[in-house]
Length: 364
Image 1: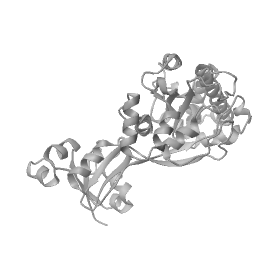
Image 2: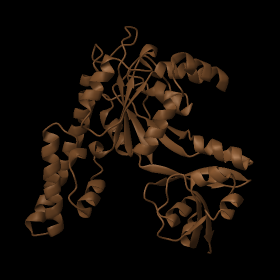
Image 3: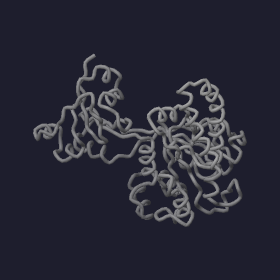
Image 4: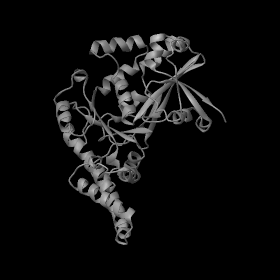
């Protein structure tokens, strides 16, 4: 599961990617400096992991991770192949969610591809290109499906009906994610279409240092524009975050953050939001060898969660011993949790909760 960073050229995407992954993607003051998508595996900041480490004192600690892809800047006409359009759109299609970076700061030294700063126009430029690409995909698929629907093929008729609804929404200048599937069949079809504008989106307003805490007029306009999209908006001073990352020690970084009036780096919040956007959650294993955060999909069962550790755990699943995170912290150790009768034994149907501390019994 990975989230792709998109936006116009020179809005701060590669600088943000560098902050997130510490992988130094080339960052320069001209369009298309990112040709191949850079992929970074980013640790998910989680204070629960730190607390479990304090209690267990393991030999090592392994956080959950999420993949972030830095995709080169899109420009007007990308859906028709302008710039490096087709390649970039293909890279977005391979991602599961979109982090859309909008430039919300003025700086005459950093050129804007359209001549002036206007995040509303920039968002619309990207949206239109993604919608046009989806429209092309939908129309091609509809052409094929209509032929099958005319022969009385029921499945083709269901698909054609859904495609028509999506097409109409796209022609209105809206994204395909506003189309509500009527049933399970339509949900599965929506997934199979792999449309770019059905992917969940998170907006990052890239501001200057002075607006890092409370935003600015540009941010107000963006929030107003996306209020009906059910999408989160994060305010981030990406250039400042890059400066923080350059500092050597944790103490220096904390001092810098305090001076700005921030409790933690904005990128930490962004990573957690991207994780949530991908519909991911965490469970823990805790022992003296290691304390580890494991990534699963929201709604996964205990056997599926076990399979993330090893496929044999899922195949031979017998049961899961589960401790709620809050219980683990309240009692201070696995032994005390057991004494208090708070350790639960769960079977194959158990839906794992975020923060569960788990131990699996299996037989292969």
